[in-house]
Image (cartoon, rainbow, N blue to C red; front, side):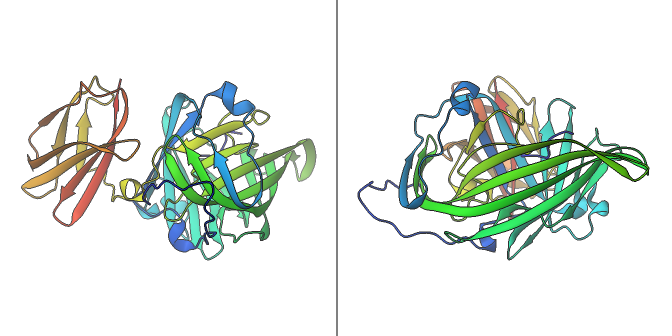
Length: 346
């Protein structure tokens, strides 16, 4: 089975006690957000310690080394996505590129007072093209320090016929086991950590008779700050890993500035080409006002370029060839609307 799944920065002295944060629904992802996670080098990630639990902990992960992969997730209105009609109760969907299958995977959720409940997903490699998750599995549980929640889900996949299919049933116990201050290469933030243990049962069914293939266990440590919408840092292994189930991985948010990620998104109004590029590319605007403002940010939320009076429809060339290679975000101010798109400089 393919794996489903994808504030201002301040300096805080390790000798200053800070208060714990409390997450609520406003801290969940919003439609229009763009989540960019940088994967830690696999050799470093395998042995990375999550550090201590408890109150007012100081975690220093400033020496993390990134590998060659970035994961970018777009949060969208489910009604305008490819499989949205199959998940009518969903109020937010995510989209991320599957490089192995060369297509997007769409995940569907319900945001509520307890967190972000996962409903299922669809992608080009699914047969049938939608996979539904039964149960009450919270991909992002909202917990206060020392509180826990038991949650689980059941996914049917590889359906050969109505009577022949495979199932993964997974259970999680999630606990807010720590709070304090964390530092990554992206900056410093006050966070609460949620630690989840996982048990997954993989079974095959033929004519209603089930055979258990194997049982695996996993774990996840996720640090959350206010307003960001996704982990500042994640360390773990299990069926929701981006790598092998039995190998520990680590990834961290490329930016801790929520305003760079919380931007309205539209595939139809902004076109960038070529993308990827060598730093020289063109921007074309459709269905916008006569002239717009353009700002470009790096993955750390720093504005590196700005231009006014960008014309609609016509091509507008941008030259960032003197800037370092990597991922940048083009942000368009168009009257009351804001659009964004990722551009990759190679």
